[in-house]
Structure formats: structure tokens, C-alpha cells
Amino acid sequence: MAAAFLGMAATFSQAQPAPEPTPLADLVTLQAELAQPSKPLTWVISGDSITQGAKWLGRERSYPELIQERVRWEMNRRRDFFVNSAISGEKTAGLRADFAWRVLRFHPDVVSIMIGMNDAVAGPAGRAAFEAELREMVRQVRVAGAIPLLHRTNPVDTDNPDTLTRTDLPAYNEIIAQVAGSTGTILIDHWTRWLEARPTVAGRREWLADPIHPNGAGHRQFAIEFFKAIGRYDSAAASTRP
Image 1 (cartoon, rainbow, N blue to C red):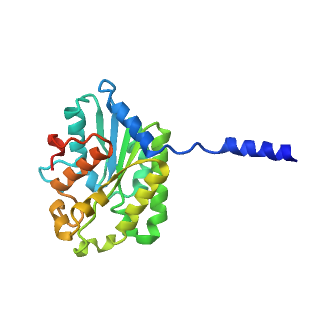
Image 2: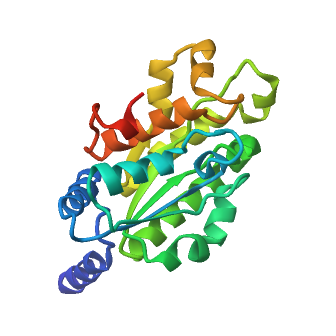
Image 3: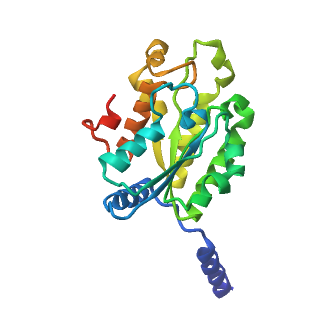
């Protein structure tokens, strides 16, 4: 009986999934890749209208454009390839359903996702589905051999009635942080950064083009936080100058 139990225990142990990599492991891998300028990377950046950069920026550049400027020019990674596949109005279910077309077909090395602003409209009833979709996208990125990065969203103008449908946004941003932590995914925490740097609604309006969408200054803050998170921020760089 004891032998049979030990055999079962050994089988069970062998069947356990490998532990998820820690954020440090992903960060070390990404930094090692970035240290080799002659080895180009493919970056896919996706999400909703905030990432697409549609309508609200005028002549300013979106954070994916600023990231590309820094990586391909200032960091001299000229053969790196960037794709911005974000779509205005997108939610996690839509992006996940279209993941093969908008992300995986490019055989990415790095996949950056900022999403949740529109999902939050579903309120508490939508939290479980949001988490499940987010986890599935992280899983697919890892299966494809790429490094996932998750972004928490920016806070909104909570004094404006146009944001009343997004009162559950703090809970959705907490889910993003929890998914990143439990899957060993690098997290770019815009939510915390904005609340610390602009604790009042009046202050946040300096980084917003409307009650929800960041303006050019807000997108520069996104880029700054992105490079801080991956250890490549340079306060003297033109692309990430506030």
C-alpha cells in the first residue's frame, strides 16, 4: 500500500505544471534581449482607443509611437518592428477573440496590452470574465514564446458625468495587478503613478484630453512609466521628456 501511495504521489508530482516565471525573470530576459541591438525584436502593442491613439491626440504622439521612437532611434534598435493593433472601443473579449489576427500572426517577441477602460462599464458582474480573458491572453502570449506586459489604465475625471458608467474602474485595475502578479507578468502601473502624481481631479485634467482619454502629456507619462518598468528610462531622452 505504501509503495502504491508513493507511486501515485510521484505521478501527481510529475503532472504538476511548471511554476510561473517571476516578474524578475521576464525583466531579466527582456533586458538581455534589449542589450543585443543586432538581434531585432517584434513588438505588438494592443488595447482600446487609448492605445490606438485615435481622435484625442491631435498633432501629439501616442505612447506606442513614443515607445517606438525611443527603442528604434534613441536605443539604436533600428530593425525592431512595431505593430499597434489597438481598436477604439475594444474590450478583453473582443481582443482575445481576435488575438490570432491582431497579435499572434506577427510572431511577436514582446506583447504589450493596456485594456479595461471599456470592460469596467460592466461593473462587478463583468469582473470574472475580464479576469479570465486577461489570463487567457497572457497564456497565449507565453505559449507563443513572447514576453507579455500588462498595463493598468489611467484614472478618469470622476467629477464628470460621462465617467459614471466606469465607477468600477478601480476594481478592474486591481484585477490587472492581480493577474500580473500571479502570472509573473511585468506590470506597468499607470494607475498608481497618476494617482500619486495627480491626486486631485483638477490635476489629472492636465493629463486628459477628455474625461477618459489622455492627452499628449498623459501619453508621455505612459511612455515614461513604460521605460521605468523595463529599466530603460532616461530623463534626458527627448521621447520621454515630460
